[in-house]
Each structure stands twice: as C-alpha cells, then as structure tokens.
Length: 203
Image 1 (cartoon, helix red, strand yellow):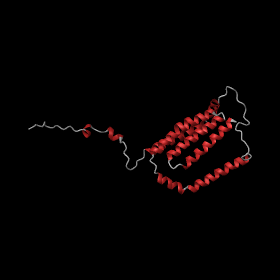
Image 2 (cartoon, rainbow, N blue to C red):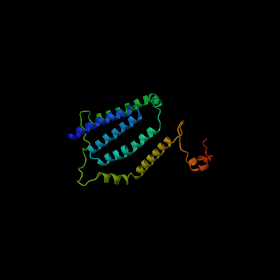
Image 3 (cartoon, rainbow, N blue to C red):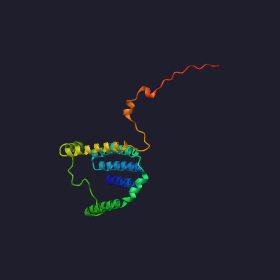
Image 4 (cartoon, rainbow, N blue to C red):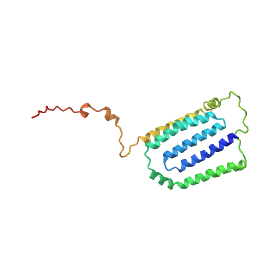
C-alpha cells in the first residue's frame, strides 16, 4: 500500500516537472525541471528494487550530463527572442508529436484493461535470493552481450562533449578571446619600455 502511494506521489511530481520542462521560457529553468524529472524517475526505480539504475540515473545524468548541459546553455548566449520565434514556427510539429504520444499511451492503457485495472510491475518475476546483486547481473550482461553498443554510446557522448566545447569556443562579435600564440611569442621590448629621465631640480 505504501509503495503504491509513493508511486502516485512521484508520478505526479514527474508529470508536473515534465510539463514545466517543456513550458518554461528560460532554458535554465527547463534544465532544472529536467533534473527534477531525473530525480523522481530514480525514486520510481527504487520502488521496483532497481537500485543500481536509480543511482546511475542520479550520478550520471543529474551529476554529469545535466551539469554539462547547464554550462553549455549558460555559455552559448542563446537569443531567447529568436528561440521563441522558432518555437512558434514549429509548434504544429510539436502538437502532432504530442498527439501521437498521447494516442500511444491511451492505446497501452486500453490494451491493459483500462484505467480501472492495476498494473503490477513485479508480477511474474522470480523471487530473488538474499545475496543477489542486480549491479553484478547488469554489469555481466552489459560488458558481454552489449559491449559494442555500450562502447558506441560512450563514443556518442564523447562527440557530444566535443561539439559542446566547439560551440562555446566559436567566434562571436564583441567577444574577447585569448591568442595563445601571441602570448607565448611576446618579447620584453614589446611590453615594457624603460625611460631614463634627468632628475628635476627645485628652484
């Protein structure tokens, strides 16, 4: 009973955070709402005894990916007026995508028996022994059967990080940047000039 109550609480918070993420006018607020989505999703993972996935969701996505995303958003100097114009231009595509997702969710709920039926996520699962570790089981599958997709995902994340750094280092008007070559090749004579002046005599 307590698990069901907690699930409904976290589900409501997750839905509100998702709505806040897509309706926020400021990209920073949208990123913070996405952080709330990740945290509540991790809490739901904990309810179905997937502790490793919950910890990875918090440490990797909230602790690393979202921090990088916030730095990129703050350093890109996004023009909010231009961003809003693009949003209104492609709003119809967003509404079509949202309608398709709603139809799919409604179809899944209807296929499961409607809103009155309850879905037990742990139904049909074999009871696990006392010393079972889902971290070890997930690691053995991840690094054997799915080793190549895992490495491909790591390469994609590396490319995303390099692209984010390249976007932040692009040249913009009115932005002062360091020229390392000129700083290293500088000479003392170009920076400092010693002037010898005669001492002044008081009358």
